[in-house]
Amino acid sequence: MKIKYFDNAATTAVDKDIINYMMPYFSENYYNPSSIYTPSREAFNAIEESRKKVANVINANANEIYFTSGGTESDNLAIKGFAYANKKKGNHIITSSIEHPAVINTCKTLEKEGFEVTYLKVDNNGLISLNDLEKSIKDNTILISIMTANNEIGTIEPIKEIGNIAKNHNIAFHTDAVQAIGAMNIDVKDMNISMLSLSSHKFYGPKGVGALYVKKGTLINRLNDGGHQENNKRSGTENVPCIVGLGFAIEKAHKELDENVKKITELRDYYIKEIESKLQDVILNGDRVKRLPGNANFSFKHIEGESILLLLDAKGICVSTGSACSSKSLEPSYVLLSIGLAHEVAHGSIRVSIGKHNTKEEVDFLIESIIEVVNKLREMSPLYEEN
Image (cartoon, rainbow, N blue to C red):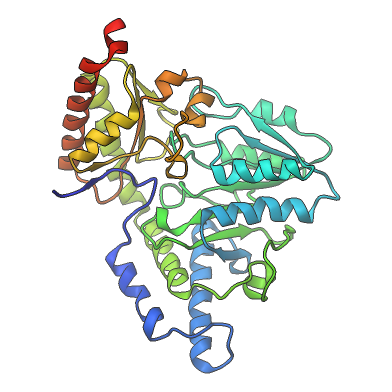
């Protein structure tokens, strides 16, 4: 059975040309970039070349890019690192109620250490209110952290406007852009972003590597003691093959952006249209317009999302009930609860995230399968009979 993969928000397949580009750094140019002999300098130069590639895509300077193990580490380094370095200025942080667990749980940890955190509510589409953001700012507010786009419902937040508010109040602004890089253009200067997190495996690069942009002049503390790698901000021997792969992947994603977005958006809109026209009692979660190209999160009333997922899995179809980082939880998605869904409705949700390798034939098979599975489950559902 050929797998039909529709969970690209969880991870993506590494492009073969990226794998080929990485291979020499495993077994030929395998040297430690911190050593001073010539082969090591070549490995060091490969890292610096990737740093330039990342910087070019988001309109930053190369010395503002720090490589990490991925989005979670980047979020932790940005939020904790900034909070610890600037706690004499204040202890208040503003974030949203629908952030990725890497941000939510980092903020909860800081609350235990004496920091104050405001979790902004969102509307039914998952958008924060800029007025609420303004009203939440205090004299001791030092950081605003709002994700660029939500990983579950795909809603894109008003990042430029948030950046302008942060700048006007002289507050640092961090954005988790893990889902957004490779799906939309981001200019850290134009958007007044102080720190930005990204992760390679969301745009067809290798897992286990990411980056954090830190605007020059923004103070952050290191979180791990060790050597002086990454300008003394992130200790540990550099993952040269994966850093090289990240640089290749982000540059490639940027070059292919318009082409990929057009294709993926067309497939997404077709999927949404077919599901809404052929099934009753469905809710499209997230903003209908301000959303990531590949994201389509539906709630199917009166049935369990996990049951849908398992029956689709039996057909070789991979989808998700929400964030991969929360998939082991039996609780309904806090993101879906935050946008106003009842518990029983949130439980019946499936996230489809289309990628550049998906075809219309695959989407047609997905649509047919979902219709079949949903109707089958509803025939068995006492809740559906009652309603």
